[in-house]
Length: 241
Image (cartoon, rainbow, N blue to C red; front, side, top):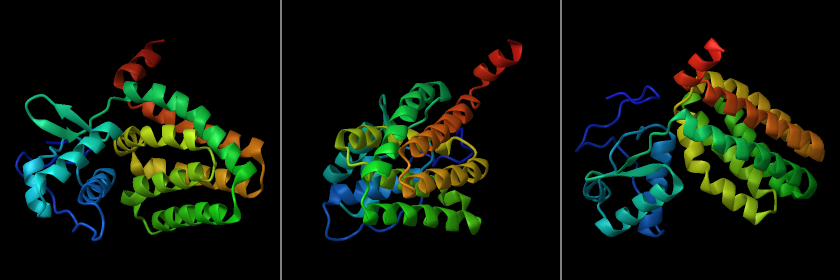
């Protein structure tokens, strides 16, 4: 079965190969992180069932931490509960995401402004490293890594804002953002995103709050327009207007 992103959802009762769980952590945290990464990288595409018994068997753990991990994914928007079937990786329609991006444009702009004003040098170095890792991967033709590396850049940006309330809100919507990116055009969007990330990075490194906010808002505004364009009904309405 193909989902909206072109990836093939795993059939019921089957799971793709997943990595071993990291050691020396809470089991539920490890399960959550492995599943989250698999979703963001597209190895568990929208519609894939998150069967607690199957996952517990694959990870060789009890069902309780797996159930906790899956519930966290549901709370983050990466998974949805389906009646009589348990949880599955979320499918989101473009019209569900546009209002989210309208809010995100303002908040990402605020985050970039705060970074330009308040970030420490080590935080700016971390943001630069996140950008370089993304740019290097795309330079090697690894467009499949775009979503995860894009999210890493934005995580580093908001962490350097020194505003915990802002960070918490943006982290809550991160799951839906990841799903939106998976449903788009990774090759095309990644080329645009890396140029826009460079503009944000240059502005914060120059300690220019106005330019940083403008660059961040322009980036999110472009993504919002691209997501809206994925909606066939919206395109049909625009064409007939």
